[in-house]
Image (cartoon, rainbow, N blue to C red; front, side, top):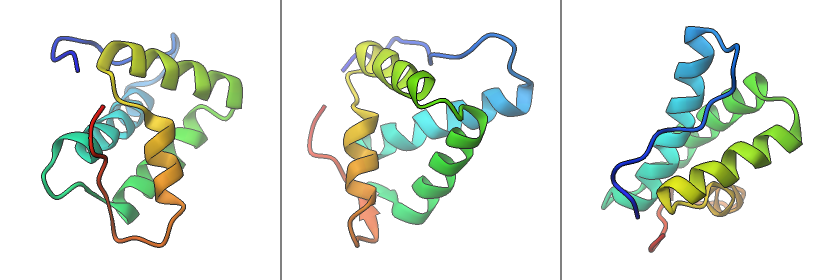
Amino acid sequence: MNDDYSYPLIDGLSNDEVIILVTFFQKVEEAYEKQSGVDRESFMNAYQDFVTVVPSKMEQKQLEKLFQERSGYNAYQVIRQSKQDVKTLKMNEA
């Protein structure tokens, strides 16, 4: 994990859209960093907002890949875990 990184963003986003992307990436971080993990419903809400702002699967994957390269956290693995019937999402390690 790299503590000194920036979130990947897309040019031309409004302030609200930037907040949505940052919130999604913060939820991924919580799944890895917080002792209790992240609430699944909270994560799913952030993920749905992310998908709304970035509807292109290709752009979503590019942002997730950049985020993983910068942070060491795999958003795809958290998304995958969110499809299970669990209350909280907790990733072991990056």
